[in-house]
Image (cartoon, rainbow, N blue to C red; front, side, top):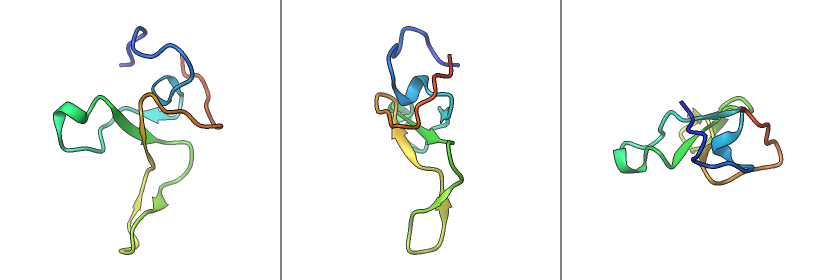
Length: 68
């Protein structure tokens, strides 16, 4: 559940497409990153594996859509 006091302005954290599921294995970093679900997963490696783009909670892009 997204905290209201966390980040109030435009940010990945407040975006409707941001998924707080952590792409990291380290618990201390789990709250700072999440997946962008705006588009389909992208091929991100030379192995041909697809993944959702990862963003920091305080980043934002031109596709921002307020989820609150």
